Image (cartoon, rainbow, N blue to C red; front, side, top):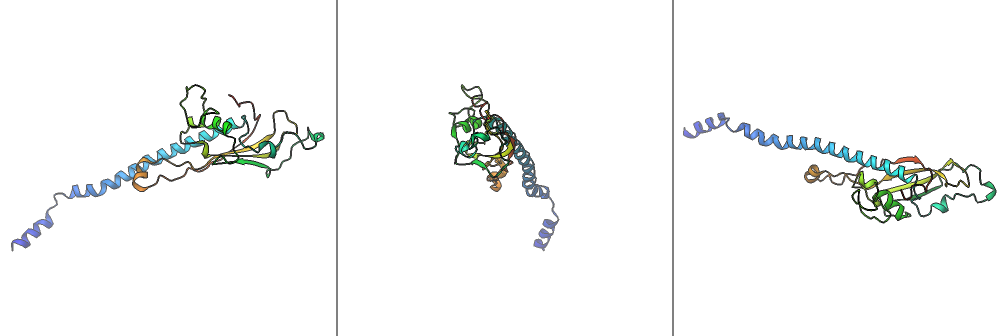
Length: 212
């Protein structure tokens, strides 16, 4: 009779239930809270990337061309000198592109836009001698190998324009991932890539800000 009475009391005893429920629900609540924090942090990184792209595109629009075949594909002078002064063709298939891996990219002007100096290869703090504000000062996660740029004929400008051709330029970032300290460690979400979010802009004088 002792054993049945003990079991009956054990079934009716509710001491410790609150602690057990807490131990079960606390990790879930913590994960939900971490998700909200990480989501806000991810949106902040996304916004930083977009702002860095916008800044880089504005700077590239008035800097030396970033592609090594630029002068060949998009010459300033017409093949027939008699056509100088005529409108350039509106042909978006005429393009010059460079991307990750520095394929077809001019290193020095790209360093200037990304790192703030033609000779810099990493992001240096503002105030360092020879360093000007660049993309990495808006988002330090962006490096030279993350940038892709495409120039294409826009139909604007004219042959023989002293300041160079007027083009449409698409500026984008590739391979930059979100940094998620909590969820990344728990769920392995460190490899979530930030969308390219290309910025399209009309170039101006592709020389004026080469040293600014």
